Image (cartoon, rainbow, N blue to C red; front, side, top):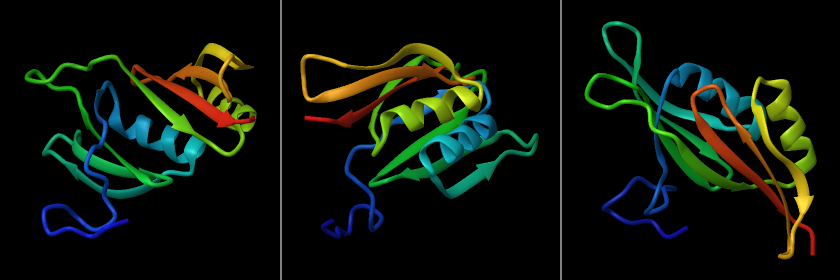
Length: 129
């Protein structure tokens, strides 16, 4: 990835920013399901996460706890994984609600969807041919 002075090394130019009900739970979910690595986390005086960043494969996802100024917003995020069935099973094991079991569609992807406790729907996909 090309380094640039206008952004941190290793960051893409575009990153999802999620406002969720419980950022700590979301970070734990992302770590368990996607093997995400927590890059940084800032908490306020009340212990709530005011900003966090995790890396999933080659992408940084930013997130924060809902607040009076920023209510939680539903979001959909698409993630390519090496094994959609395994990722889907991990998500369900870690409390996600099934939106769609993984199925092969008309395109090259096998795709399934889950919704985490923070309100984000994660579309999991693996290119299968």
